[in-house]
Length: 148
Image 1 (cartoon, rainbow, N blue to C red):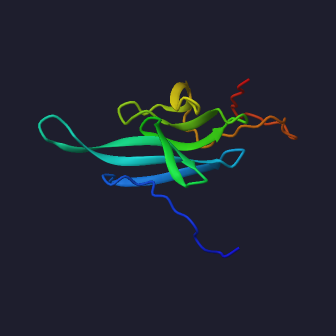
Image 2: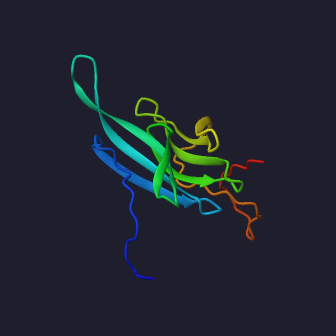
């Protein structure tokens, strides 16, 4: 109504070299906002050599207080994601680390706030969509994952 920012939350940690929010979603009941965040953080190897690490996370934000209630690490990169219709599971596209850059979809139990598995075999997952209806026009030559 006022066309102004009414609330903000920092997704950046003080030591981050870089931070990127790649996707947002609201829970079905509106009580939580989810954000996929990827960070570049400083790291030091043996011998004092300065390097950087990648950290991908799914943030959970309480919409009543607009405070971060959890941050679930999902590898080195967190991209687009989808939330199951029952609100209990998130599916986050990303990769584990620079040493293991195989793309995957991380399966996150939102009740325990733990990564419980991964789905591999992607060349570049760019979107995760959860739907229950059948498409009006059938898809051709497009791989899909069906989770029942």
